[in-house]
Length: 51
Image (cartoon, rainbow, N blue to C red; front, side):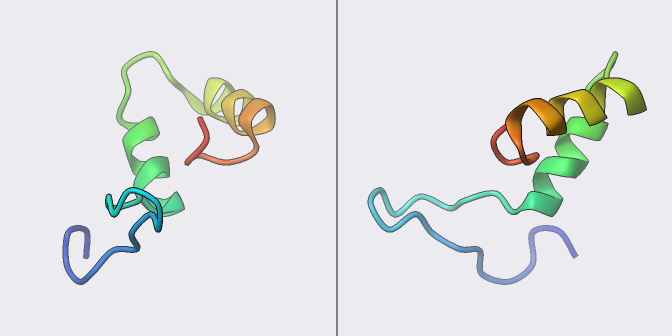
């Protein structure tokens, strides 16, 4: 489940890092980003975390 359990933290800042799955979910909820735009973002940035 989202929001349950400990997340991984950035070693330098101590901040929680979003998982790839969390970022996929967030991107899929952005109005105007459909399957083609989503795929283009992933190709351009390499991962949902980087997009």
